Length: 409
Image 1 (cartoon, rainbow, N blue to C red):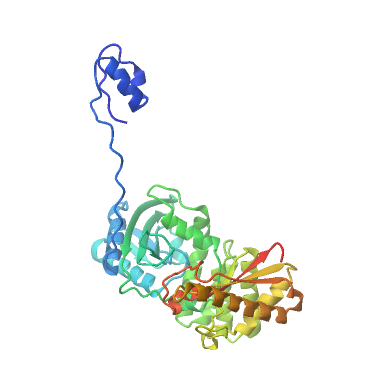
Image 2 (image 1 turned 180 degrees about the vertical axis):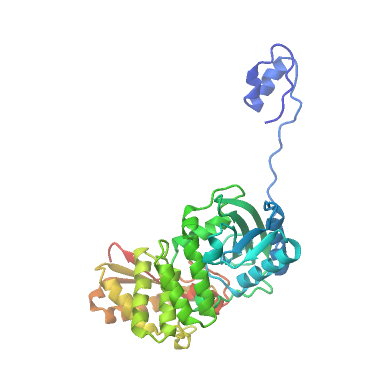
């Protein structure tokens, strides 16, 4: 509120309530307010994207330079950065993490960056989380993606609060958004509560805010999953399986990354029956949450399955598991085809419907109880998660087939 000059005995305390009432009273008292009425706030200028490496430095320097420190070195761990919509880690998010570690060693010796593991989490360290998300010119995750929105946050695990935050906008040039091995191979996607809590911890908080309790409760599980993902990407499948089994037995272990991991590691180890059972858990998790996106990929412009993309398991087994678990619910399933935004929108709508119809037919053949209980729809590129139109591994989720339980057919 603007300061008002109180003059004369008639200037009553009511002049402090609002600018308008205060001004009238002050004028009647023979004096006027010293400040002018505030001008309307100007619209904020659009954030201008900068080169990728510069965006990383801008956000990381903002966080390190503003985070509180004590007399001793502060342990910091990085909970791996993700795409802020899909929750996937990519080559780009790995690059960012490596650069953050280098920067801390070069300029910020007061911070001791240690691996993200169950052992380090038990020390109650500072934790860095971040999202790196393709956005349009307005900064939204819709339409034509023209830049990357970068959010980086440091939280105090003991206090349960956000203590520093940096944001930047990066140009698309030089960004490798290809998912790392585990996420590239994972068959299923769902709007997982654990991933949402991570993203919200970065994007929906400001300095001083309390951290999501879901994120705090799941951080030990997250550290086990991170170690398992690293082991999977290093082809240490036995180690990865053991870590996923351990994660599954924690209170926060009922999440899709764990079920995807159990499926993938069993498949890589040649344990076909165990893999099929684990894929069934992927299906049940998605249907329980009424959203399961499966990367059943088709040949370009075709309704034929792209069998060249089956390195992480056969589509035939996937479809049988979806049919069996869907039929066991005695409910109706909605099958929705999606496409990337490249090409004609009308053609994409038609093609996504034809692909959903193909999957519908396969489900009804695999489980006759589903006949008359499956609806096929196509939405083209309307529900893109990545939206870059790259038509490669980086946006495979945009070409997913989704399954939902609906009340009636």
